[in-house]
Image (cartoon, rainbow, N blue to C red; front, side, top):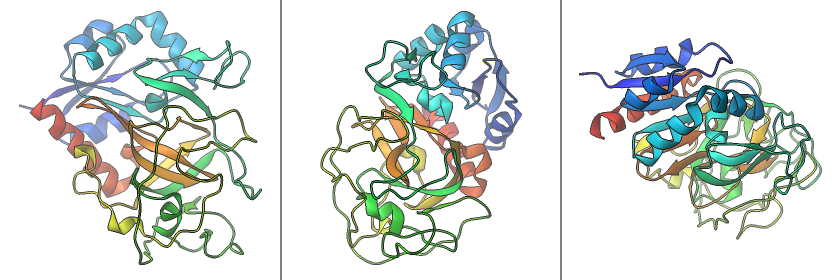
Length: 303
């Protein structure tokens, strides 16, 4: 019997692509805004539409915030997509009355399942090189144990910049077209994590404990690492997914995947055994996205 997965409708956009992706993965997917429907479903998907503050306010008004919190606390499988991942955190600056920083009293409140504040993606890297924000296009995701430069070396293709070739325009991401794959040989090392990262606006660079302020050039390849999380079962490190966002989550021990675009940022997180968030859109990410949705449905079946 197909598991019933609710796609939370907070009245901000078309949810059909997420529903279709889950249905193709073997679920009975349906959109609902009723907290009672959220409470009855076998799993919950919170899609990525709109701004943090607006979405959080609507969810609170509709009674969805508490319903989703209760389901996550009960161990029911959960998947937050893009903004849905952001809403797993304590606060977000996007769309708040006065966008400021993690110390601001104006930040919007999220589900507070994970600690920290969702802030703006910097428009330049530590060397002052400019990046397009919002970050739109294909980019790689690697396990959180990889060094920052391995996100760059995981795949380099025309129109991108590797840390090994600063003369080329742009870093480890594609604004247009389908991704291609190339790997460099080497080894990788552990990446230390801190509970919160300083994300204070477009000019700031988030600092990750155990890593310097720049994306250092390290001989290594994400291809040597593997995801240990069941959500990424069968998906190789350095696989491409489709991103469209201008804000990023804070770092912490809950991070299971990372991506680089001006800075290294969390692109996949996990809470407990069955609650996940992804910065990218699996429903728009071709075969890799379809595999991730199948993995989530399998997690739901095993819950």
